[in-house]
Image (cartoon, rainbow, N blue to C red; front, side):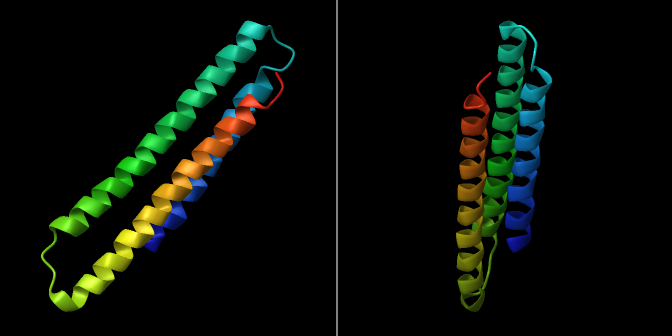
Length: 106
């Protein structure tokens, strides 16, 4: 499950950078172009957050539905904890990306 954590955070970071690029591309343009770029970037960020959370939820559901012996339950619990941590990182990265986008000063 740590692979999911390792993949989710960089994916959100890449999308945040792409969103910043969309705003940067609007520099020197009219206010409506900049607002349009910000809106589009926010949509990309929201979509990335939704996809990341859906993947984590799916993994948690599969873990919950799996029939594991008691000895393996500890490992399942650890995996669930890692998935919750990953979800928190995805949500935090999303909020940071949106904050940076909104504070871009355009």
